[in-house]
Length: 516
Image 1 (cartoon, one colour):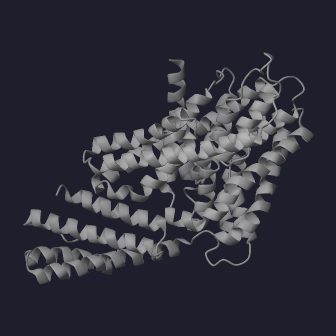
Image 2 (image 1 turned 90 degrees about the vertical axis):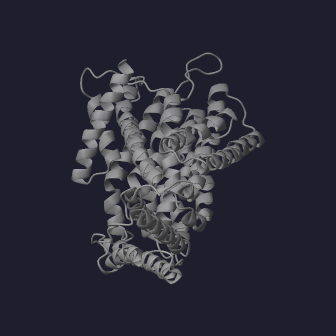
């Protein structure tokens, strides 16, 4: 009952914080972490105990799935090389750098320092997506940051398991076994994710009930995660693969009414889970600090040094990668490197990994250094979410990479005009067939022409009489417009953001027509 009360309190707190964040134009994740810290520092606040399995099984799957569905597969194809390099090379380099620094500036043993390095080696997809959602970044830059955080899980997880094995059992590392474990984690996760996506696609093709569709969408990430973990592969990778594949073709499996309902339901789920999880990050830190042994008072300086090392190393790796991200190619760009570096934050996944470190070693003694690893991990996560999160928008604006509102509006207006003209062309074809009353076609034509002349104006093509015929033809015209919209996207004439916005407008219009 106490746990339920804590969750409800977090939801109420998150709602109030999100309202303030939107009014003050502050990233909600950063403000939620600060709010969690403030609540934890209030005298009498009970210590919060979160099992890592709760984060891994309950919170992560839907958040990862929602992030993966938003990923543009078209843009991902253009940046897969730098994403691959970062998912392997940067994760390994970060783990080594943090481990070496921890040995030098903390009392941690070398094995526990390597555990800390493995925990903090990868960026967090939940934090990256939540912070980057409101930024007007170019498509390739946004996809690079998001895809890197989604696909580096297998590398960091293998490193973490190897490091924990060394720290707990003091056993020698078999790199051949580690390589096989990586193939099982990554390959198995990809296979399970693709299989789940295929099965879900077959089911959704035969489902027309909005309630069933919603249930399927909510169950899919949990199913992918549990199946992959049961096969001893990466549940995170499975959820990401399923989300990317279904996000690419999901619009073909459902109608406008179902898509709008799924969007609304997932928006609520993502809000609630993100609110709770970022509040937990802030609430955990004071509790963990209270469990530190004597002589560990330098942890703030140590956490700051580790954060600075991660940022500096990320800049060095991102600079050569920046040339591949720029649409026109050319030389590496410090501006792109700075933005991509600052957008790569740590979050809830490192915290869940740190909490899963065993309490005792193989010989039955308490695992030395575990409390300090937990505190340093949480402190680095708080630093990145608060410092980088609050300053990310100014960094993007000063870099000159942010898309101007005029550019986005112009692209959207041109796309609206193109799909409206495609609809008029289809009406001309129907007129030549002389199978539909002319006054019905004229009403629809007037509405489309009004949108070309006044893109933001109301649709004056009201159905009046012949309602059934009007609805049927309007549905047909919307289908033509959707086809034209996909063609514009496939031809790289519009961004993924514009495609999603216009598809939602068409869905709203189709849902307003009622059933066919």
